Length: 380
View (cartoon, rainbow, N blue to C red):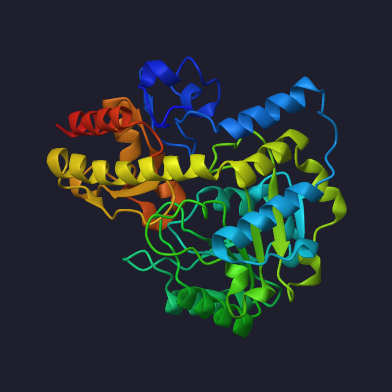
């Protein structure tokens, strides 16, 4: 495996990738939108999945070894002694999150989020027949205790059982929530009778600060966490995640055993290899993403100084404030039309995303540089 994982240009990746990232748009569009990496694969994962295919090990999973590997990674990486008896495989983070949501909230009931936040939250809440209540982040991208208190009060006004979807670390801003912030959230949730469900899929990639698992904070034992190796090791197509319930989570948060059937056996084999033997790969790719964080800052300062950019503390996503360019609510649409470069649309992350775009940093320096060139050309 090369010491450089994020390499090449469009001619490298387009012929090799048949999925949504490189396939959705026309061939002249450079894609830096959906959270997939333009990266050489993790060799231990390739070897584990190839060996399974070679021996015909493509049946139904047991699941126990996947839970054990996730627990071992959690304790080694975050000093979190994850309770394996409260962990279970699910197909992926959003499927698991939605099934928990169905159990701990009421049909038509409120689900609180803090925008800008992972855009799929809105779609899955809608699909589950629930209604979003927004408690926006502060202008600095932090959890806002006053906004949360107001939103929780609103959510409880009609009775029922509201929930809060926590994105930890935050997608798209890359914010790493502190222990104090999470404990404040837990206190407010307990006061208002709100169940916190934490999407912690981006937790392995942190550049600045320390990731704090929600279930480890005071009061977090009443919540639920979802984990997966899929983002950090670029395994979105190999379906497997873990749902972990806190010791005092609502009884319905513990999903029926049948939900574990959705997690692919090959996905679990890949995840075990990633968590157990793929840590050196992750260290390398995280360092390259870190370098791209700085590269993007330099490129924007040189080509588009009107764009606001707070360097993300975690994830491989960058959140750009393009309101100074005068491109309207959805600058991603303008960049795609005029510059043939695709970013994620800011408004899809909530009302506070108007005028913003999300950029995928998990690509080569050459592709990132070309993307900024195309942005600059679109507004020239």
